[in-house]
Length: 296
Ligand code: NAD
Image 1: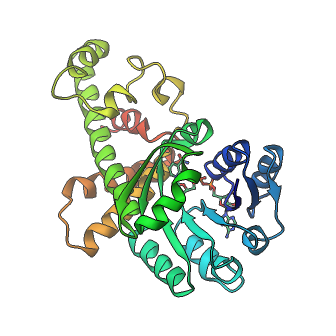
Image 2 (image 1 turned 180 degrees about the horizontal axis):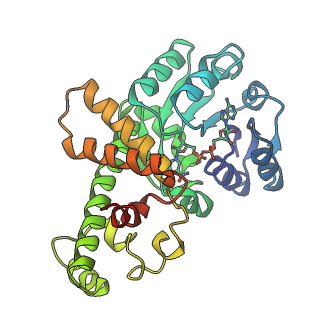
């Protein structure tokens, strides 16, 4: 079993670290927030006094932080991971961040003699708790093979997407496609309702027709057809509109940096910006359905 340093024990990192503890690893964790620390301690983790202390003995370091600036800081700041971890440690960043920061941090890690993998996840808080996350990994073959046994204790599907940064690229492309599909489903169900079509009938037809998508069959934004969907619990997240907006902005930033043409992604980003600006940020992102219905 490995010694693991885990930085960022929030909604995702907390249950992910708990699964590593459950698998028998020795996990030293650190977070800035008291509730995150408490949860980790309750799960049997060993709480460190600082990020540096959490990674000092680690064979593997995992970070699960909010966004790029926190990741840059955690790794590259004075007394950060690159200055404190043992050179033989494998570094894994599972936060969702921009591709450029992921590549820059990996480069800085390599200059300090470390192997590093970007390994963002899909599957949400439920997947983190159940250990069924999908990991999209960017980095060398060697870093991927070293990381796999650890990632397998937190996820079910572990994919090597290519070189450094490609894990983040896969994550934002996936979420941009999903957001565009979700807006389409919201529009279709809203139009159906206004045309007097029973929504269950539309679901029965479209879930078996060419309009089918994950956003509809697993996560139907209209209450009723999919009992487990957030639409049936007042759009309690799930995956918040705030998070979706963050990922859509990352996708737009990436698209601009390589001159990719993503008009629907841009439209989805603008719509989610409007949704969040209207106070729906903490709700599940499928609340777009209720929002579209309320704006005429
Ligand atoms: P969160 O805000 O619940 O957790 C982040 C944690 O990092 C917080 O507890 C915070 O105190 C801690 N933190 C911030 N800066 C720190 C620092 N310098 N040192 C130590 N701890 C620090 O967020 P989350 O929902 O766990 O998301 C984490 C990442 O996973 C994000 O990048 C998010 O986009 C991504 N993600 C989230 C979900 C989801 O459904 N929540 C799904 C997929 C991916």
